[in-house]
Image (cartoon, rainbow, N blue to C red; front, top):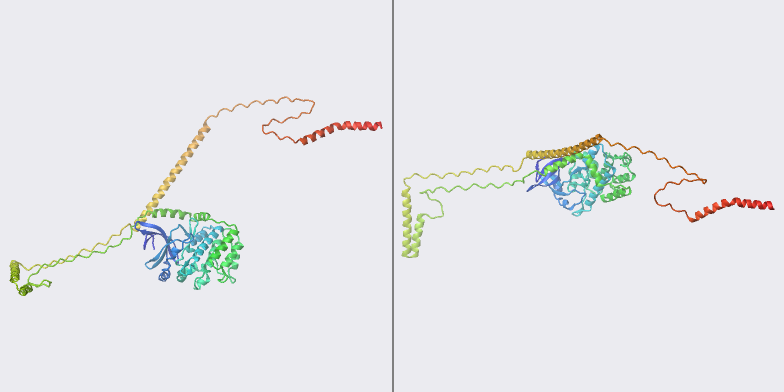
Amino acid sequence: MNNREQFGSYMLLKKLSEDPLGESFRAGKIGKQGIDRVALLRVFNGQGLDAELLWRRVQGRAAIQQSLKNPNIGDGIDMGQVRGTPYVAYDYTSGKNLAAVLEQSGRKRQPIPFDHALLISERIALGLTVGYETRFGDDRLLHGFLIPHLVLVSNEGETKLLGFEVAPALREVATTTAAREQFARYLAPEALAGQAAGKADDVYSLGVILFELLTGKSLPPPSANGYGTIIDQAILFSEGTPLPPEIGALLKRSLAPRDQRISDPSTWHKALGKLMADGHFNPTTFNLAFFMHNLFRDEIDRESQEIAAEKKIQVAAPVVEKPVAAAPPPPPPAPRFGVREETNVRDREDLTASSGGAAASGGSNKGMLIGIAAGAALLLGGGAYFMMNRGSSSPAPAAAPVPAPAPAPAAPVGPTPEQLQAQIDKIIQDRLSASEATLNKKYNDQLAALQKQLEDAKKVQAAPRPAAPAPAAPVAPPPAVTTRRRLRQRPPHRPGPRPPRRPRRRRRRRRLRSLRRRWRPRRQRRFRHRRQLR
């Protein structure tokens, strides 16, 4: 299908992606006033896909869209079939599916960080947990066809899971060669064998998606002993180091056979949440949004301009053709005299006979006279009319009714696809011109301000500088005063807090020590004199 094509009650605005299941479009819901809302339209028109069987399996599951309301699940708004092709419509969110994120990351050699891989896997598991806790009829709601093409990563860092309405039917109809090549590695072995969906099938798909997010490579086929050796030899794409042991153990339990696998998505979500808490990982949607803007910078800017232009498109509501009015009935033919017409009015003989019968039965002379007078009047009137038209030619036959001209086909209301495309191109060109003019004005103002600053600086440098004052003559220091006592130069006075005084005991000890030194020679002389006297 092409852009600007009407698909049921939707106008296809832009083709976003294509895979073996079909095509994805950004489409506008057409209402009475034009486009009411923008939707993500998933059309299942893949090559070799049995659309009739798919529609028979999913036409009773439209109520699921009203039951599943969660930030990690796509908000479904419509589901139906147009010209034999099923479709599902979701509320539009700007972003890319996970398959496109993995492809762009490998093409640009820009690996998905470890924290972002854990966050995306945790949000997918949370969406599966919400579905598993929701009942549809008497059964729990399982997905059963978890692939990156049905996971949306928004430009704001949110992760949404799509396809709960059609996933069980896709397990049955997605059997083409192209679908097997792209989707087989994400599905559990029991799903490929045609078994009924089980709650552990989505756990296997979660393990495969987490492995690809961490390593940047597709999961190879298992060896003789399973995936143990492959996981032990795996390398983180973002850091170039082996997988953490706890993450490796989770992957081994996810990719194990069905009887040894983690039982359901809720248990898997709790195990991954515990690992993130114990490993002090703190991924945020803000960082994931920043990564998405770096990975798809040009496409995000272009999409913003396209959406702004598409909101101004004037689309007329579908025209309902009015029934064509029937042609008016032909006029009655001109009266022809001398020929007896089949009418409900009795002829003259019947009328005369009835008049006579009525007079005889009445037995009244007055009634007889009235009947005779009426009959005579009728005879005279008919004879006069016959004599007047005797010489004239036979009356012309009635003109055939002219058929009413067929109404001209109604001209299509609203602009053609070429006119719509021209409107969008003109609006985009006007916005680009306006933004370019704004940037030029801003840069010109900044350039003028810088030039003015440069001229002011040159004027300041060119102005004569005042002469510097002569340095003051050095002042000779005052002569030193000498005394007999040893002089101690006092330090210059420094304003500030007074230094703390020494404790009194310390001063007393120092004073006693000086007295002992002073009187020690006298005591020695005294003792020496006493020894001499002895």
